[in-house]
Length: 371
Ligand SMILES: *[C@@H]1O[C@H](CO)[C@@H](O)[C@H](O)[C@H]1NC(C)=O
Ligand SMILES: *[C@@H]1O[C@H](CO)[C@@H](O)[C@H](O)[C@H]1NC(C)=O
Image 1 (cartoon, rainbow, N blue to C red):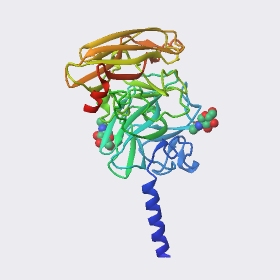
Image 2: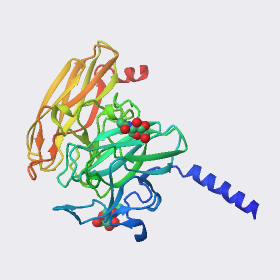
Image 3: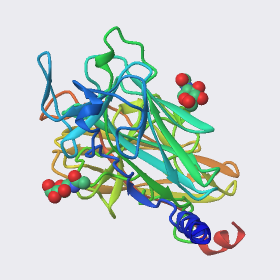
Image 4: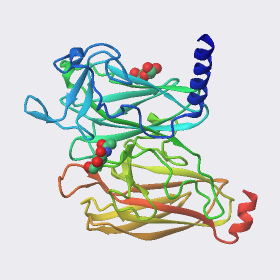
């Protein structure tokens, strides 16, 4: 019997090691499995382990879609349930991962009554505080990405509300916690930039129609968008072709906050050599209409690309030719103007950038061998 148990344990350990998480919702990541009714006091969850697969701490509520709070009707993006984190409350789950790999966490969150909300997302020793005061989607829900590097075979994912509101039932709602292993894209002889088509990035929850916000880099040491950094005050939005018009492939980036939404990558260049930076500028078919301008910088070279958006999708190619001044050149994109969706006049939106390519003009092949 003992031997049987021992070999069973070994089997489990082997299976555990092989089954590092790749992508999708975490187990019960959409909270559709709730606590037994005996562990609910109204909406308050009683007991640290009463939500399957999760451990909670502090004042956590289990909210059914359609729940009324004063004159506010709470909706849930996926399935019928979500949780709400009160002051200093948190939820956590341990996930099998591969040490050394990078992972991006995606979750959906909505503010309820508090105005200035933040969430502290962590996988020790990394943590990031994501502000939620700027809303980007019309229904109140946004999805956020945050990345970390696994240091151990298990990642303890913690989402914590550091808030101290007067009313503890004013905290943010959380739903659809998902994760994706990121691979590190390489430069190729077709492109001196990594991940120029943005195909590699955070998990997009299939049933969400509002993309994923990638917060500024200051809040995240490891980018959920490999190769790229968001070096601004506000986030950029990561879009999928299932719900948006995307110039090429299945993913693109929307510059949702004018000059406060800046995306950059540092390329290796040879001083004195001529390069061309080509890229697509378009709109996401998300009712974001108007005269748009995307500004691109490469070292001292700059171009402003006008794009007339009807909000119905479409794109054009643009080019910036420049002479590199150093061994490293920063490639930078942002939107000159702020835009809001014409269907709700409140959610921020903007031009889409995709399919960014950098090549040396004279002899790209010889350059590639040297790099
Ligand atoms: C966020 O949470 C982590 C882990 O619990 C903690 O180390 C860090 O200090 C927290 N950050 C803030 C700003 O509360
Ligand atoms: C996504 O939506 C489809 C169609 O509405 C539904 O069948 C499916 O169960 C949903 N998936 C999740 C994970 O909620």
